[in-house]
Length: 151
Image (cartoon, rainbow, N blue to C red; front, side, top):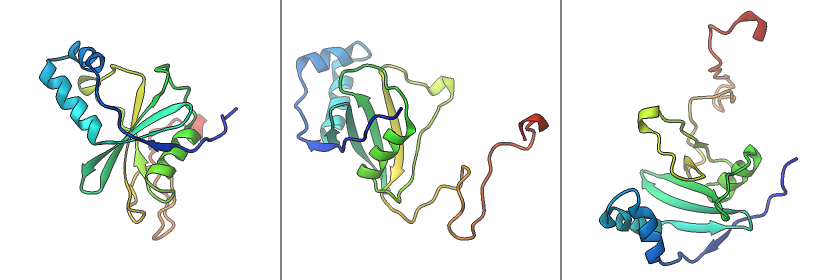
């Protein structure tokens, strides 16, 4: 069962604490920690009773949405909740992607997810099983070597 959607509210960016710096220093230097915290300070902060979302501007119209639970616990995934976050912060007709990186690039330091998208509703990504707005063409990436028993 899906939890009812609760809209996010924009909040004032909280100042970094010494505890924040100390936590980040477990993975690098104080200078590294301060750089990360400076980037977080520049992001928009949004929250509801469950989620904290930071919206980073990446350039060329791209944004990163960093989604985590306010209590730090793992997120029980329901794509509808992430869709609502994307709709509210980027726009209902805007698209976003989630990247599953190569193992050599993976960073797994916290219970958070990252969506990358644009606020331009005319941009469409040429992946997935979604009809192409221009010609109604479906882009099917399920693969041609799929065994017959899977249809």
